Image (cartoon, rainbow, N blue to C red; front, side):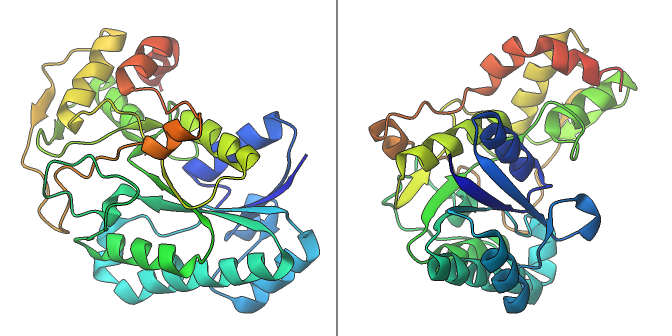
Length: 289
């Protein structure tokens, strides 16, 4: 099996990818910025740190999940966004190339402006509308010959390593609190375990180029919230529309087509409705946490 180094291994996606790869027999080298997270301490903004860890651990594949995904933080501090998302990616890509490791770089649907009808293909030209998207597009370019994987809004079904939208919604409903969210932005919520499975398949296939990973089922956050509540019999009357944030600039419909995923024979992530139906018990647990 393959030796795989994961940057950002304590994050939502990094954790799921680690579990998936370890479960299928790969040797995983988890790397974290926080020295107390276990695994390897890795500062992707330090050339010395990246060179030392890569030389010592000798991975055959690198899955680069580490990034600043906070859109508002990137807008407020574009220099930090570039340092981590762009310069950090360039350092990772340089060292991966130096030791002959394949690189899978994680990007985002927000490299597209999302001001049209959506349905972006891998061959479409990105036009990001905010600092986060611009930094992630520049990171794609810095990643060189890496496999670029663009993903949409990710979520898990628990509260670890951080609560995602299902936990936020159902925890509020359990407390009798309102859930205020927009009914405008069209998203493709992707269950992180399904995305990790796709990653494992792409690594096995030795895929190259750009690949979109997303379910084709689409929802606004309001519709998704009601779907989650209905799945566990929680009250939906507390879920109410509110205007979407207009800062930073957010795509209205940055939806992804998955043509290449189909060409490669990889099953896309399930839609939010199927996940909710299959994992009712896990969602119900969120009502009591």
